[in-house]
Length: 223
Ligand SMILES: [Zn+2]
Ligand SMILES: [Zn+2]
Image (cartoon, rainbow, N blue to C red; front, side):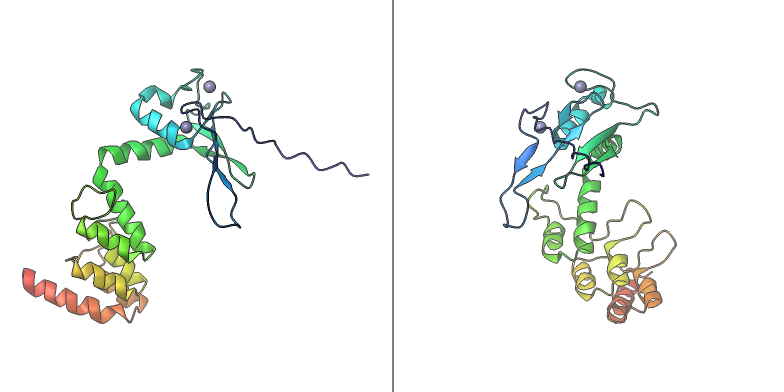
């Protein structure tokens, strides 16, 4: 007779060490979706936290990178990485390097505009033009009221939203960016402009738009 399948690991329905709220958060939604979400990060010492609580704590208190907020045990592994265990609603258990998330959080705190830029670029990539336009107007809900430049770049590659729209033959994206004064002649890391990229990809709808915008830009700036 085969052995019975191993019991699934029982989810510990404990509370977050920092805020004392349950790790299992009820959510309201469509009937087919799970009725709760799990926000559970477990440290090597076995204590549980909401990821958001732990990140908040870590950016305000440097020693959170090394010690558990509750028991003060060392939380780093032998290679000094802050590896934590996380669970998902489907019962999947995995690990992640929380140190990286903390580094990102610290970076964004020190460079608030970098975070805005990354949010804008991902909105453009998702073709969520309404939300992206709000940022160009400085009207997004969580913003500081400043208009975001349409020329912001990805942290790597010096690629702009215009390059991305060119690559995707995304007419609406290109038009939106041009309307807010994006510079169509910016070059990415490899020296390519959005127009060159569009030509290479045979992105037929955006080529004429980018070509005429580039001409206009050249004559107005005298480049
Ligand atoms: Zn919490
Ligand atoms: Zn602990």
